Every structure is written in C-alpha cells, then in structure tokens.
Length: 228
Image 1 (cartoon, helix red, strand yellow):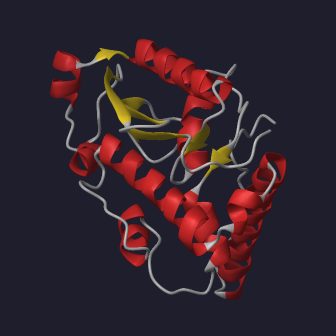
Image 2 (cartoon, rainbow, N blue to C red; image 1 turned 180 degrees about the horizontal axis):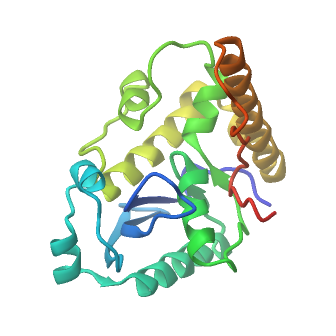
C-alpha cells in the first residue's frame, strides 16, 4: 500500500436519512477527485425509497418530495459510489472522509460485498488522537475552524468532502508531516488503533460518570460491521 500523498486524494461524503449507519440510506453522495489540476467534483442525488425524516432534512436540506422528484434510484447511486471509490483506489488515490467509519459503514450495510481495498485518511480520527485534550466539539465545522480550513457550506455533501480534503492536506503538510511519511499499512493501523482507544476512553469516561454502559459497543474503523 502506498504512502499518503495529499496531491492524490479522493474525497467522499454522504448525506443520509439518519444517524445510524447500519440502518440509514443515502440521500446525496459527493465524490471529489484531486489528482493534479482543479478538483473534479460529482454529487449524486438519490431517492432513498423511504421517507426522509424531518430531523435529517433539517440538516442537509433535502426533503422526501425533492428526492423523489429529482433523485436517481438509491441502489443505482450506491453502485456508482462504490465503483468510483474502487476506481480511485486502483488509481492509487487515498480516500479522504471525515468520520470515515460512518460513511463506509453505510456502504457496507447497503452492499455487503463492499470492502476497503486502499488507503483511507480520516481527519476526525487523526485530530482526536493528535490533539486529544483540546476542549470543544469535533464537528467538521469546529475542526475546520481550529485548523483555519475553509468550509463553504456545512452539511452540503460536496462542500463537506472538499473541507475534509483541505484538512487532510493541512494535517499532512503543515501540522503533522510525519503522517505522510508513514507506510500505508502503518497509517491504516495507526488510525484503527486510535479509533479504538478513543472509543475505549469514552466508555471509561461514562463509567466514571456513573452511566450505564451495558449497551456500549466499541465500534471498528474504517468499517464497523457487527457481523465481523
């Protein structure tokens, strides 16, 4: 597996029908190829085939009616998204996604044959591990503000994907250049372990607060598949 190259990225973001990646469906899929020259962006609108809850529509601005009138069939958008990601990996690009485990788990849940076959860079996992004691939220908007990275329109899939790519560039070029020197397998293992430690730390914190953690399950990265 190649090392991370901030000049060869494939930024990716989904807006969905909900917050549970094991159950939700795609509403929009943003695919941004950065491989010399200006970024090449494509955004796919899906008709998820189910009602889009008001809470989800309030976040990304897409209603059930709009998706039904203008969206493509859900499974068609899913298949094209996976095909483009696989093509990017074959071309040696790194998949960049903020909170990648959410988006990639959505794909696996909708298409069980989907696997991670290339390098993934997750700015959220990196930020949580490298600056773990910083106070405040870790939303994409908050993290972009912290690193002085532009976010044009939060919760609009293409804008979010581009912002994730800018974060990856900033982190690997300016803040922690040692990330770009890691072997690809080493970088993947580092992020998986960092994600696990973050989850374990959250569980331990909840225990100290006297919270019930009997239903708390430490999720996996870059795909959380309870089936193993």
